[in-house]
Figure 1 (cartoon, helix red, strand yellow):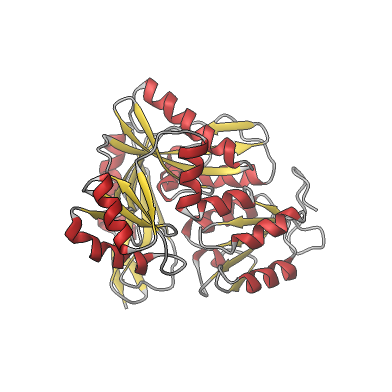
Figure 2 (cartoon, helix red, strand yellow; figure 1 turned 135 degrees about the vertical axis):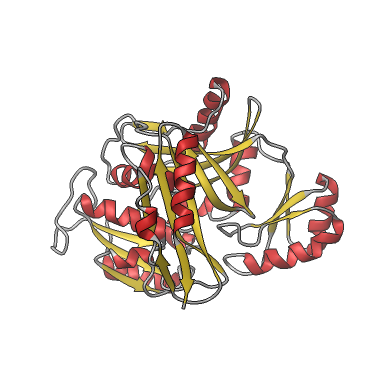
Length: 396
């Protein structure tokens, strides 16, 4: 039985065992932070050699949506904490186990609601009455076309369950809907199915409000600005300049969503900002890819904050040490990645590099990140881009 604040010794009968469901680059950083705090960590993913598996005590390979396989691994490992790192998980199993006393991070309800865009959008817009883009849920291409006509073109079509922009399109006119619908069905995490059509919002910029819920309350990290291409993160920076009123509203929106989802851990709350107006977009109940910038900017990275919070440890007031900027490095094509120019990248002042260790690239995939600090965000940006440009990725 997990007791907050009490941590055992790995590989012994009294170990504090953490089961990671999903083992990508964000999970890898969380595993490292959990091990620093004395946890025994078991990493799971659908393929062998995933980044977090490379630093965990042991691992299991199975599809996260396979309810029987998930039950079998949980019964074998008997974890104190189950930590979802991805959306596509058999969340009904987690709900059932949580009701029987299993601890799920942040909660099984949060994992279930946020794995499906319909659940979290209805919570935010219909229950919490937060401002969102106009939207329609659709089950067929004809329904999507009708929704686009009602909301107006351009609009955005997304699968209800996907990540990193997979299956997401900006639909400029009615003639583009057929192609967008096909792409959405191919990009959905759990196979073809329902989608959301969102009215297009003209915004000034996007932010992520990294919000940590811990034993000593809910705090927001300084705003993280970010750029996404086709729904996938490319660059982020912290702090993001915004007015006091807009930042106060962003914190209100983030804390409202996080409070409603419940549990301990870090949440990545995405918002659009238009003038003083803040519009809720999405939330991830786990570390966020745009939060990789906190490796350089904060006293405690989002991964360290997550580890502390889920273990029932207090989170001190969050401190920004330096403005920082991150640039994602992608591989294009098929093969095993090799990185060159790392020595040039790390010659850039105040630079950090994370090579994720993904065993292969298919089509295009995020394989590394460059982070740099500076006296200003602009200086950090120039350094991070210089660092990223220095690294060359070849696929063999």
